[in-house]
Image (cartoon, rainbow, N blue to C red):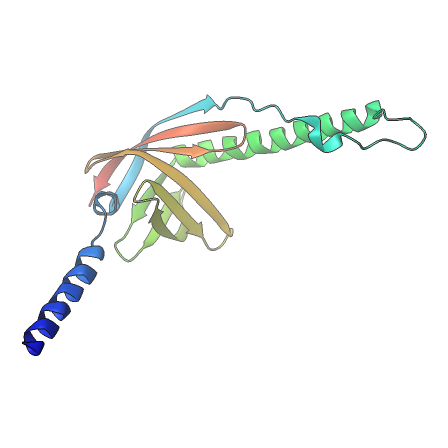
Length: 174
């Protein structure tokens, strides 16, 4: 009786471990070579930053008022940051428009663009709805939200602070 109980418990544990180790459907579809078909930019809603961080900060001798130069400096820094993000997103837009992505089963990815090849590692998070690509040479992590994926097409979204890009890929080969 004791042996049967131990055997039953062992079989149950092995079954639970093997059932949890399955791959997600997104991972099965993702493996292969993908070419971009359509890339569209769209703006994110503008989130106005509150001046809560500036409350209580005053210049000496001004009796509770913030100087206009502080506000000008803050808006200048915001415009500078937005310009950087816009430039980064435009460069990404161009490189994504001309590149192909190859995902392999051993969690490596190859991005080929204009004769250049970039090797990276990839992983799926959030139950297969978010794709992270970790590049080695320009040490960078790119995150894509998977909107829709099947065996022939994939629609993903990449978000920046000032805008987002929705990219539609077609599978070239498995």
